Image (cartoon, rainbow, N blue to C red; front, side):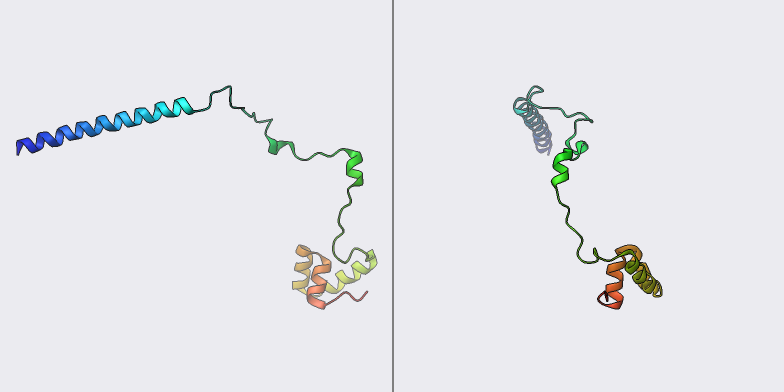
Length: 115
């Protein structure tokens, strides 16, 4: 019985030693293969690419054409106001008008725009 206990204690010490050696080797390997400070570029808080945004020169921006929204762009203010008055009579249409816009709300509840 005493012999088996001493074998267990010795094997426990061997496992601790083996674990220590493996961890030491792993740390040494990481330190040797890791990038040095001269190889890496540190990016400061002001140098972050996400902070810069997109800037376009004025003459280039003048040539960029924005896409128009689908439908409704050719309605006059008086026509839009009349659609708004019709849509305000229905609470669901009025809520949709506030969230999605007058054209989408009128089309959803009353069909195609008459003009």
